Image (cartoon, rainbow, N blue to C red; front, side, top):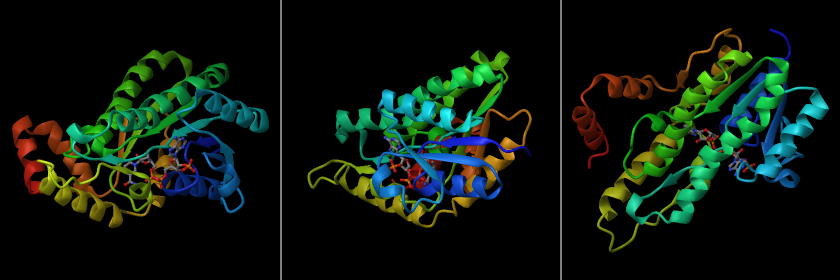
Length: 269
Ligand SMILES: NC(=O)c1ccc[n+]([C@@H]2O[C@H](COP(=O)([O-])OP(=O)(O)OC[C@H]3O[C@@H](n4cnc5c(N)ncnc54)[C@H](OP(=O)(O)O)[C@@H]3O)[C@@H](O)[C@H]2O)c1
């Protein structure tokens, strides 16, 4: 495979960093982004540029700097994202907006910034890192699920809109991977007098245990490379444990209420 210029949002840690290191080891030119360039540049395994997905001018500047330096962007990996947990009723509107901006409208603006270059080149690949949680409404993770589900759907629309431009857009939904995502996640506090108190607390313990026992993010890097090597990528990909991928399949085939019952049982609610 010829050398590609790959731009990864959120290349400073976790899944983004693992994808970057893996693709670099395969001979590709990799540029990742961070909001904290001064702190993270010196010990980064990949080239980093400054970018905040919630700030459109920083998106445009990071993309144009990369194109000026490397001549093009062949592959965009829209990976930057944050977590959030809490009963929807008790989640502050400001936090809901922050998550939707980081996980949905920000990534869409990154695509808007990169598309003109890809259209001019008449080729390009965009991989949106969504989540298996984006296929279902998980309790106490409703805002996160909605942000990732929204990115999945807009990708479907954009694929059709861009189909004549030689550009491929796809979703890659990971299951649980061992990263620092829980540290940066907004946790609505477990309130003493909340009607959700016990159920939320138990669910939170369950969610955190899953991320800690998550797979090695290098697996996502391997999957990304496979997609890059495919001439006509699929609309949706999943990566992770078999049981997590199976949960999406079950959602498709089971009656809604059976599936809801499975979730209630799984979370012991
Ligand atoms: N870990 C999992 O189990 C899992 C499962 C499914 C999906 N995912 C998705 O995978 C992606 C990566 O998550 P991760 O687990 O690797 O988490 P992570 O280790 O916390 O990494 C998050 C990355 O996103 C960047 N980021 C956060 N907010 C940003 C913003 N406003 N602008 C630009 N960059 C921002 C961070 O960069 P800086 O802080 O350096 O700016 C960091 O590089 C996310 O989209 C997440 O939703 C993760």
